[in-house]
Image (tube, rainbow, N blue to C red):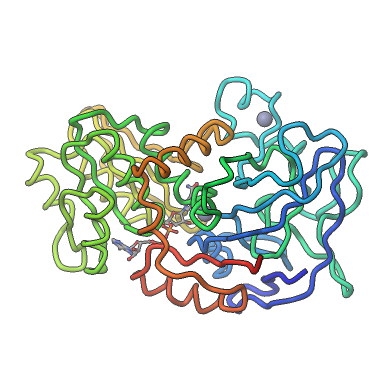
Length: 369
Ligand SMILES: NC(=O)c1ccc[n+]([C@@H]2O[C@H](COP(=O)([O-])OP(=O)(O)OC[C@H]3O[C@@H](n4cnc5c(N)ncnc54)[C@H](O)[C@@H]3O)[C@@H](O)[C@H]2O)c1
Ligand SMILES: [Zn+2]
Ligand SMILES: [Zn+2]
């Protein structure tokens, strides 16, 4: 199959021929229909987060099940599925206490060397004629097919368009989940979202569904203002021109109940905390480069302000994703507006160049049927 491979940090992805294995007992082989470009892929390409290489990138996808292993019970050939990197084991402390997106059990994941963890599995999932090829975040979606654990996908209504379903695979689950699960936005509360890419726009969308009274969208690209309003923002602040913290504090007479950082910078994470009202919660979604610190005023904790991380929207994805599909089908989730362009696998590097300019919501790779 054709796949987009990262061989060296700082270099473009290469389109290569990659071999994919047959499903082991708990594995599913999927024909990829669509894969979104997420800023997290770019972090790995730029080296702000390390990953063993070479690897096939991509982790925001949907497709159709082609083949399943002998023990698979949750999906069957022909099912339309959304994938999720939050592969869960179902029996560790995190899974059993309802925090399955924090599961780190190796049972559902391959080792960094792509060696199977369980004796029942059947060799590396991916390979090339010239040597090993590693899977990335349990998925590797920038490829015509994916071989994944059955606990890394969920079946959805067949009428859901798969290019929009792909978005639910990461950005929507991350942004929407941050606003429901990590921080529970209630009707009438005030919200600020810093960074209006796919993740931030999803947090805005969900805050609007929840009935937030004011939703401040903050970005340094002016054209993100109109887009954020379409997703439900009530106010746009151009952080390239004004001090976003000061603006939010003044407009809300003291700060917001919930702030979401969806960029991945120490500085904007500090801003998220500094624009909270007493008792408010700052949620850091962005991937802050390894080694970068975040510092806040210690005395602010006396106002019961909270600073917390949010991983993949604190999801329970097999339950959440079909619900998000329903939200889209009933017109509440704005996924049509989220797709700025549809591209081919061969255009993946151009898509990441577009991402760097910050003007697009999402680029989605659509594979030929
Ligand atoms: N925690 C998780 O589970 C998780 C999951 C998915 C993505 N992420 C991370 O979330 C972040 C956002 O991802 P995305 O795909 O939406 O990114 P994106 O590149 O599409 O959007 C980022 C937005 O931030 C804006 N921006 C950049 N610098 C800014 C600044 N200083 N002030 C205000 N706005 C600024 C850009 O203009 C752009 O609109 C990334 O760091 C990504 O890795 C985290
Ligand atoms: Zn992502
Ligand atoms: Zn687990």
